[in-house]
Length: 477
Ligand SMILES: C[N+](C)(C)CCCC[C@H](N)C(=O)O
Ligand SMILES: O=C(O)CCC(=O)C(=O)O
Image 1 (cartoon, rainbow, N blue to C red):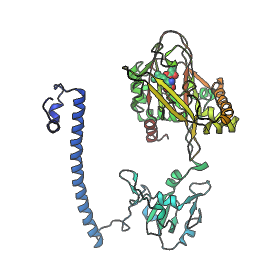
Image 2 (cartoon, rainbow, N blue to C red):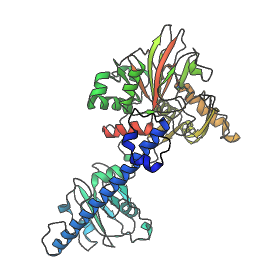
Image 3 (cartoon, rainbow, N blue to C red):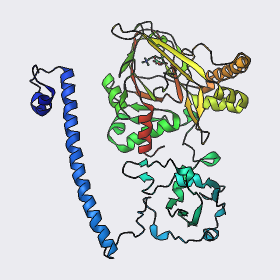
Image 4 (cartoon, rainbow, N blue to C red):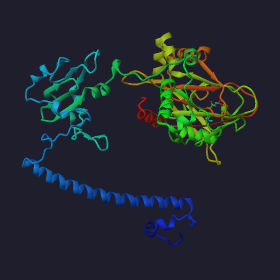
């Protein structure tokens, strides 16, 4: 490498990446980076050529359109929603059409809202025109290639009253005063407008001991989980429905943990590394690394975004005890809501500090982690439970609650703690080598019984956003 300047490196990437060269990791990374830059530049040039060609074709097509030879949609507004039928849209210049628009368009305040039934049996939704225009998916407002909005920062300065509204069984169309047209499939509106009380609920079973024991164990055999789309979908479905799933008959090794986990989403690096192990006497850093029992908790409460899934795989144990505990946090919160709605609101509205001090590897300075959050949050639109974090070990010094509110907070917190530790809330399960347990760490708490002897647990964290994206892709969310 000595004596090469950057230009010569980038020109001779293919030669220098030969494994026989003795480049350091850092140099190899640099070379990859330079190769990627070169590749990006070439790709950009190709794209520009393609775009020029397309532009030439378009110009030719427009000329043909003027002379009546091109059959392209004369409105110049390609239909922006797959599946909707442009032929069913009609536009007139008269607002009076709104009255005939369909019996379920019940009101049409020109300057305010459109009142329309979005699904059968539901109350009509009152959709402000401002929202409708903001959610126009025509090419003027939405880039369908990147699936991103094209910003209109002058939205509120526009005349947001419609000139005409037309509705049929499937679609709704608006011609705006400035001539712009927007088409909305009703299904799309039903799915995307403010859900309020009438939203589609996530398919969840909030469970206590009895419920979970009366349902089939949420488990998928390793072969099926790994090799079939349906197997993966079942695992993701279990995670959405129960907040945990097991992969059975997996290789009884850390490699088994890795394979079963990576099938769901990439393993998340954290201050504990990627794939980690838990055994007694690994240090004094955490109660997890002792023989003691651990009460139900979620992990990473001290991070702004806790890990989405925590994976546990028992590889060895030569003593007794150590059974795993699972408690559904959403069920616990829901129980508090039923038993004492005021305590529910107190917990929802109280922000708590969570803290963690951890030694770093290689003599680096320690981590001082801290995050603030209520124990649970609700989806702002639908009110469904969204997040849950509870860790009595890592709760920080309470400097977020005014003295006058302390008694109310502690009573509510105690109520929740009491619900969590009721035997009726607890699901105990003895893990064994070959059974990989995946737990939704934003919903379900885990813990363990005290144990004797040597016990080796392998595990890892998976990111919330990535597994939920997989669940959406698989159609289970
Ligand atoms: C899971 N692993 C062994 C890596 C870490 C254990 C630390 C648990 C910590 N109290 C927390 O709640 O995040
Ligand atoms: O040892 C166990 O089974 C669980 C450990 C644990 O709760 C943790 O590492 O967060």
